[in-house]
Image (cartoon, rainbow, N blue to C red):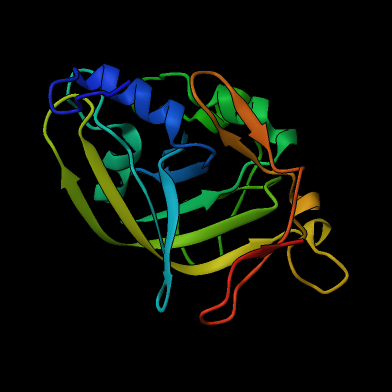
Amino acid sequence: MTLDFETLPPRDAYAWMISAITPRPIAWVSTISADGRVNLAPFSFFQGVCSNPPTLLFVPTNNRDGGKKDTLRNIEAVPEFVVNLVPHALGDAMNATAAPLPYGESEAEHSGIATAPSAKVRPPRVAATPVAFECRLDRIVRVGEGAGAGNIVIGRIVSAHLSDDALGADGRLDPAKLDLIARMGGDLYARTRELFTLNRPASGSALRST
């Protein structure tokens, strides 16, 4: 089977992409409007960029009418945001914040999600998340136009909140304790519980699994 992505309607292309590009980590992004109203929404086009400087990105696509999502509107007004990671225990709460609300209504308040003040940015973080990255906007890269077009939001990480409960004996994050979830296709999700090791190859050597 071969798909011609140059002729596929955008919604069909999207459906194939989210079914194939898996698992996708979830950025649960909190932002704040110019008049102080908090927005909280999940995005699964999300990834780290580099560590020098510490940088990540996520991509809010345009709405079906071609308009900007509330998260993007807020970041354009107040160029700061927090990326909260989503453990299995917060999956239902995260999913509830995907519901469309009028601009200015707080998904956190609507869904009963407790927030906590951030250290260096104005938007609050989700209080119960095991990891929250405070970010200042680096730049926004527009890709495409109209419905489904992307807005790559690149942020500099300026602070991180790590739950002690998610740390292992070595003082680092323990993947099993994090128990994060990731998006699959459609309404499917995955848990990061089944782990295996692949030793990194030395220069010129073959990849070995353990």
